[in-house]
Length: 316
Image 1 (cartoon, rainbow, N blue to C red):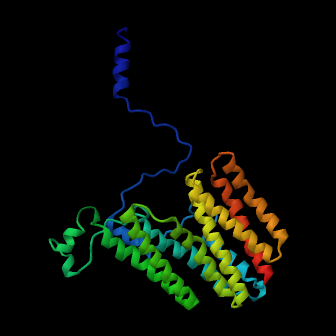
Image 2: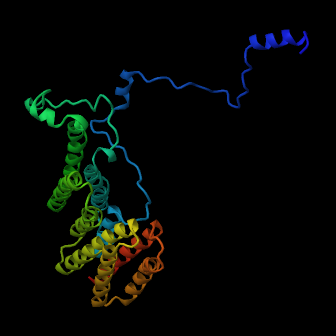
Image 3: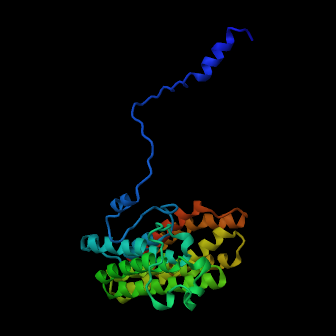
């Protein structure tokens, strides 16, 4: 290195680093949010966050409710769209929020630190009390979740159900009961029975919308039978997706589809039966060939469910 290069290197060390050219002239740095500003972001008494979970084209409560409407065979011109919208909101969003409580805190959005602080002013829950010792450790946030998440969710669902009538209110109470049962079984056996999820996802939404749009005994009997068959089918769907060699899942799928075929044959709907069989056939081909039954089958199951409901509606 020459002497002339030494001062140049020293100057380079003291020279400020060049500012890289930026394409846009507007820049800002994220500033920490002042604690008092958190109140600005809370405009409602009850806060709700909505998101689309998994695939939209899969058997779920919203589609089961629509299937109940189709099975009722009601004319569109006589449909009260406000009642229909509220009923679908109840079975899909509100019942779904209630049922999600059975999964515990791992399936719930975390509360803000201020909201997660225990604020249950009961004498037997004070520090060092026997109940406080029982709920110590990993259960320190149980009561904030119960009173700040569970209670508002259940009350909102009951309020919406009360607007729809006694049938909706009764089924909402059943959903709450199934949620408590699922939470209890999860803590006892460390898993939630799939049949409970199938009832909340398919059976009960189908029944509610069916009762909302028909009072004929024949239509009710056919609709309830179809709802029961698709509840069994959903039970088998969940199991077969988890384990392609599950014999119980195959039995559930076979029993529900056999009952579906018998129902459509007795109802003299051979064209509907042919279309539904074609939609259900790929599932059995995958099982026979030893391939995994994945999410690609869900749109086929959904379409078969809606077509079967439409077929039942045409029988009335």
